[in-house]
Image 1 (cartoon, rainbow, N blue to C red):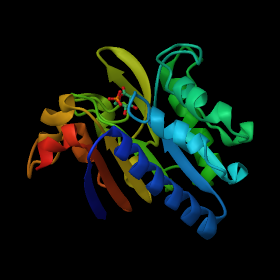
Image 2: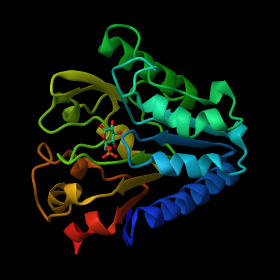
Image 3: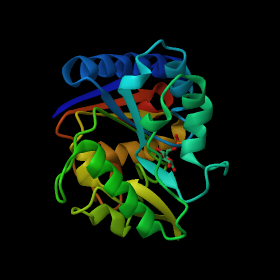
Image 4: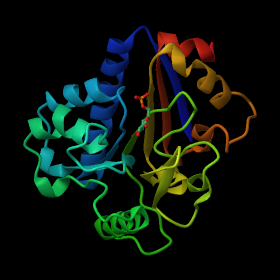
Length: 239
Ligand SMILES: O=C1O[C@H](COP(=O)(O)O)[C@@H](O)[C@H](O)[C@H]1O
C-alpha cells in the first residue's frame, strides 16, 4: 500500500488537491480499463469537490458513480448522501442515468436494501459471491468519532468480512455502508478531512496502536493507494 498524507493550507487548497488526484485517477482508469468507478462520500466536506468535478469536461459515459454509504432516508430527504451529490455534481453534468448507482433505501428493510445493492455491485463488476471488486476511487471522510463511511465505533458492521455491503448503525438509526474488505480492495482510497473538531479522532487514527473497533477509520488499509488530505486545522493532529 502506498500511503500519502498531505496537509493543505486551507479548505480551498484541500479541494484543489483532491480534484487534481481524482482527475488523474479518472484518466488513468479510463486509459487502462476503459471506464472509471468512483464511490462518493457523504457529509459536508466533499461537496465543493463535487461542484468542482461538475465543472470539468469529462467523458461522463465512461464514469460510473456509486456511494460508500447512505443514510436510510428517501432521496428527497436533506440527509441523503445521494441528494447532496446529485445537487452538487450529477444533476449538472451529462452523465447517463444508468451510470449512477445509488444505494437503495426504499424497501423498508435495510438488510434487504444492502443485499440488493451487493447484487448490483456483483453484476456490475462481474464478480462471484465471496469476491471483492476493486473500485478505482473510493472517497471517504471521517466523523469526530473516527467513523468512516457508515462504519461506526463498536458496531457489528465493522466486523463484516463476507459481504460487500452491510447495514450500519448510527445511534440506533440504520444506514447502508460498504464493508471494510470492499473498501480495502480499492485501487485508490482518498480521505478528505477538514476542521479542528476532527483532531482527536485523527490523533487516534494515526497513533501507532489504538483499538480499531473504537476508531474505525484505522481499518482502512487498501491494497492500492491511500491518500489522507487534511486542511491545516485537522492537520494539527498529525504534526
Ligand atoms: O455521516 C457521515 O459523515 C462522514 C463525515 O462527514 P463530514 O460532514 O464531516 O464531511 C461522511 O464521510 C459519511 O459519508 C457520512 O455519511
